Length: 157
Image 1: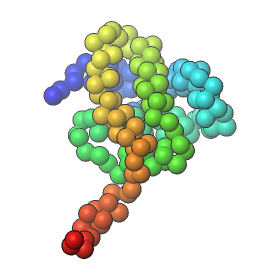
Image 2 (image 1 turned 45 degrees about the vertical axis):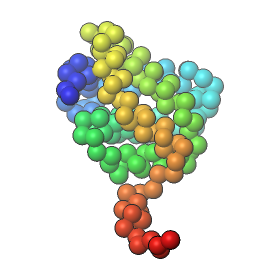
Image 3 (image 1 turned 120 degrees about the horizontal axis):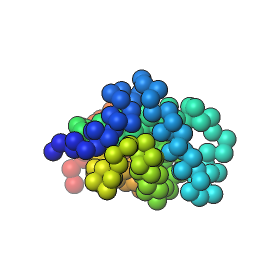
C-alpha cells in the first residue's frame, strides 16, 4: 500500500535523499532539542554525545526505518542498530518517546502537517519502532550467524 502523504511530507522536509542533502539539518536539531528535553533520563543519555555524529546516526536510523517500511526487508544495518541499542540498555518505552518527538519535529518542518500526516508518519515508522522494541527483549544476532544457526543439524530426540 502506498503512503503518499508520508512520502510527500518526507520529501518536503528532506528532499529526495536524507543522507546526502543538508536540507534536514534543522529538523534533526529540533528533534534532538525536543527529545533530550523530554526527560532527565533521555538528557543524561546524550550528555556526553557528539551531536553532529549523533545526527548522522539518527539520519541513518530513520532511513533504515523508512526502508524497512517500504520494502518489508530487515537489513543487517537495522539489525546492527538494534544490537547497538541493546548494548546501551535503551529501555523500550524510549522508542515511543522518540517517535512522538520525531512527529513533533515533523509538525514544525512540514508546512502542510495535519492529523492525517501524523498518522501517515506513525504508520510508516511503526514497523521499525516495533522491531526495535522487540529487539530490547530478545538478543539480535547478526544475520549470518542466524542463518548458520538455522542450517545447523540438530540432534533428533
